[in-house]
Length: 439
Ligand code: CMC
Image (cartoon, rainbow, N blue to C red):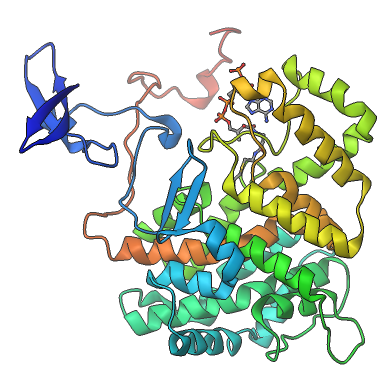
């Protein structure tokens, strides 16, 4: 790596040399710290970067979300997430992610109206959902039903028609809460509650979740706002696993319903969308504040991991966790404190002052308190990932739109490092024997 002076500024470069052929390429390092992989091909077209799980690979250029993990910074389209959580609504943030700018009052009203009048689903979607087994996981129902929406809107295949594309985006953002609430109602054997379009986005979702016989469900405004803040915090997080799935499926020019279903399926995995559920299990397992020091010792001995702590990107306090902690205080002031919150607070206190966690830069992440809030609001554990999928839909779709407009993108098709057997001849079935043990 070298640095050369150019017109008074320091331009950083990287030189790649093939020691066998002596061929050498010097390539500039972008301000974002990336070098083009194509430089490698110039040295030798057969050279490949081996990068499992893309730890060192930037797969796209994106102007949607900025994260600085060392400094604990998260911004959507340049706006600090703290300001958005404080002053904005989820629906406004969804507009921002998708359009790149905050809406004017007129744009916001048109957007809000569009989303509101698309909250209903076709009656056949309802019938479709009613065919699942009685104990089907709501996330399984959601993934399948979102995929099924593509059969209801065949025009969605026209992905390069701007108007048609925006119509599907509005439909998806509008219908996600309806499908999520229906999935829950079905899994607990309750009749579906249709959307109430006089309510705002999040309050309407709570109405579809909890309404029983009252003519109108009025959610506690503090709880509704708390959920809206959680929706803002979960709306996007750049190239995470589900967004990468969205982009990969989108790169094949699949319709947005199929791509969103694929992204939601990735989110369903416990390594991605399921950590907040694991936090609740951990707190229940710990059982009391007195048991916290003993649990921390086990973590330090490497026997366990502290769920809701640590992050691949954030090596500082996850900015979302800071906001969520404040939201938790507001929610618990309404619903009353609980045993698990006391354990969580004690756990955080001990961990933040312990050398093991300080040296490894392990701080609470977004999941440490979000599950506690969901649980305090009455959501069953199986709904936690669904509650993540609703707001992340805006992020997935923003990345999908960005991908389709990016001339540098082609169908996603990574290369591999083949480590299987060399060529061998086919053996007829009756001549095959089991391989000797250890071979
Ligand atoms: N508890 C105890 N030790 C930990 C933890 C933890 N939660 N996380 C990391 N460490 C230790 C780890 O043992 C290792 O120590 P050593 O150097 O002695 O071997 C060191 O810290 C580095 O860990 P790592 O596994 O290399 O870190 P990673 O970046 O690969 O893993 C992580 C990140 C999130 C998978 C991990 O921190 C973890 O498993 N956390 C618990 C699960 C969790 O809360 N997941 C939700 C993440 S946020 C989701 C989102 O952003 O959407």
